[in-house]
Length: 113
Image (cartoon, rainbow, N blue to C red; front, side, top):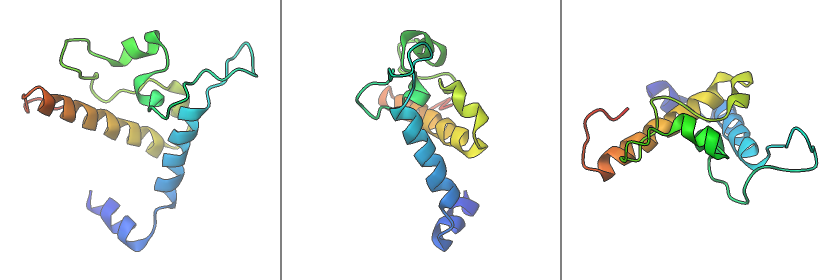
């Protein structure tokens, strides 16, 4: 964590900015493979690379135990595996943050991952 802080303080954020932009782009654009003129995303910036954009991809990441958590260190968008690892690392951080918030919301701070 200290190295991230040092990079931010020195202004060395190009990698972070590019990776975040990659997540935004992959949230906004998902072309249908049968009809290249059709975009399969919603009109919201909703972190669909993390949560999924259809029921099948959502089922792969959600625990469905009634506590609002995701599986540990997962994300729904397999296209990001071909990009620089920091883009996937951001999604893992978002997943962990989601699970932490779900733990706090349900009052169990144990096993936050």
